[in-house]
Image 1 (cartoon, one colour):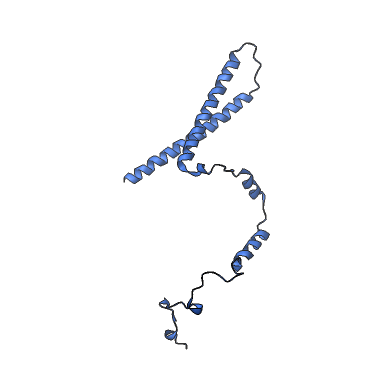
Image 2: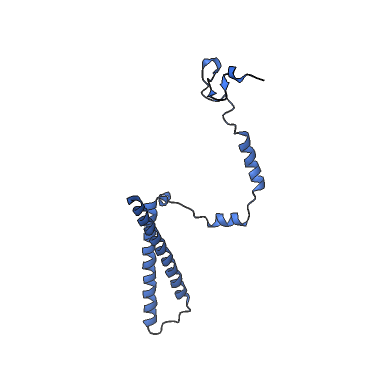
Length: 151
């Protein structure tokens, strides 16, 4: 059996020393080896490219993935301000649509509406409810967070 106690690499203590070539540490890889990837990495990319063919789910996810142009929206305060702005704009648009519908109904000889305006108003009202619900949930989370920190 091999006596491991005389070896510089003791299994119970780890490495004792590191030897350098010509007593100088190597600062970088030798020329030509800096661009090489680990062997498993390149093979797995090729394998993934062969096996992971896009399907309907991938196409739908890429089509509906939001394109973020303003990365500041990822901050919680900026996002909250934007959400409040959306709620105000939806409220303003819904109010303007209601006023135009009321003016159209009171004017004599107005053309009959086929109901398209009412459907749009329903969609705007639903969107406003969703945004307000999100704002309420965020306010509740903030309140609970503050209560937890108070102890």
